[in-house]
Amino acid sequence: MTANELRTMYVNFFKERGHREIASASLLPENDPTVLFTTAGMHPLVPYLLGEKHPSGNRLTDVQKCVRTDDIDEVGDDTHLTFFEMLGNWSLGDYFKEESISMSFEFLTKHLNIPVERLAVTVFAGDEMVPADVEAETKWKSLGLKSEQIFRYGREENWWGPPGQTGPCGPDTEIFYDMGQPKCGTDCGPACTCGKYVEIWNNVFMQFKKESDGTFTELKQKNVDTGMGLERILTIFNGKTNVYETELFVPVMTKLEELVGSSEMSMSETDKRIICEHIRATTFILGDPKKIAPSNTEQGYILRRFIRRMIRLFKKTGIHENCLCELSKVIIDQYKEVYPELGENEEFILEQLQKEYTLFAKTLDDGLKKANRYLQNVGKCGVLSGDLAFKLYDTYGFPIEFTMEMAQEKGLQVDLDGFQKKFEEHRNKSRQGAAGKFAGGLADNSERTARLHTATHLLNGALRSILGDEIAQRGSNITSERLRFDFSFGRKVTKEELSQVEAMVNEAIANKVDVIMEEMTPEQAYESGAIGVFTGKYGEIVKVYTIPGYSKEICGGPHAANTGELVAFRILKEEASSAGVRRIKAVIEG
Ligand code: SER
Image (cartoon, rainbow, N blue to C red; front, side, top):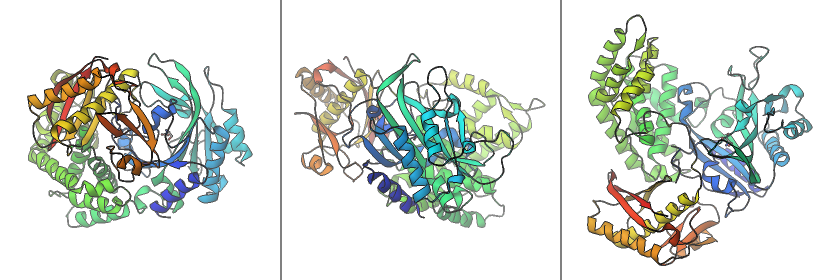
């Protein structure tokens, strides 16, 4: 089975069961200050899981591109990836446990032909707050799973979400494929890491919302949120032992072997896998329409980490040229039909890879010499000091994880606390990137966020009207304090233009205009003059938010009901974000 066949088979299966297909969202979540990447298909659906009506109905399915950086240290093993595609289906207050489990079982056993005895499942064991999931357990038994195939675990294993501080969450039932080898011990089960059990699908029964004070409230509706790893299913279905043997990695692995073949030294299998995995993740992040470039903060820092790690692995094998572009081209060619943004942004992807290579190559040799010297001299304690690790970061551009990896190869450690301390001392604007914030989190959809979201639409509309229709949104990020809006524009926006833009937004606020939401097909939206991306990447029905006289945009919401709620709008700053992209930060009083 090919990846495309699997994507189609999955989506069609759920479409035949009343689901509507929705588009894969950006890898960079909109309006969510606490999460760097989309880590699951549920991220773009948070407002709907919390009760907002989805324009495509209450049964949805899709294939969502995801990035999870917390698995980065596992990359190189048989199954863990940072970038992956998640096949998902959702019930927004429609079906619940029984039907969800039935459908998963049918898909696995009848369509993927996995024998029942190769399945193992886990269910929530219960705690003081939520009882054991007897309903899920009973359902699995009724489908033919034996008691020894069903495992009860607590909150650590069988509770999903929220990924950050607040948001929808609930108990889950996880489905594993039993690779067939004997148990590694009497306690061996799906939670064991010996490799016998590979997680393939998770069905989350989302009926709670975690509030910011740590309490849980019942959601208005009981939802189902499922996610299945495309790469893992392909591996299993095609009888492969690891993801790198699937069609998704064979072309890039072949190219890499060709490139490495000319070197005198050989590259380890693990290093090859890491490069193939990271070049795929890097290509997808760079290829996202939001055009993130390597930097020292947030997503840009993750990119930098991936790229610099690959460069070092090539160096280790005696390859000093930049091979990244050639590898990335293989990924682009392979995926651009399914993810057209890769083809559309090819120039940007290759340009950024080249730029980052050139930047890092300058300091890498000196840095490596220094790092080796430092590591030779760590003495008996076996720990590289935080000061020296910081020096490598600051002077030679070595991401801390990179230094840790070098130390680890020599059986040494790095004083991470010392590094963090030093880092804190030196941190300036680039606050969040390197020091943490790699795991996800979800913004709460407060009224203020909704108002800032409406302000963003007004700003976009005003910019288009003052600077010209050719400006296009490149990114948007909202915290409870401010909005940030990135847009394509070739020069600095003058002070005068900025005050015109600000005045126009304030005029819309003073006029107390109602914000109107309508649902329509993407074609109708396009014909009505709404702005948005019309690449067939939306579902069949979209929401269009109109602020008459000022803005008309395709958007998932939520928004203020009337512009008057914003009270007043002020631009704080206009600056360059990356080549050809400007950034505005602004606040409202409402
Ligand atoms: N959100 C759940 C997960 O990521 C199901 O997709 O496992």
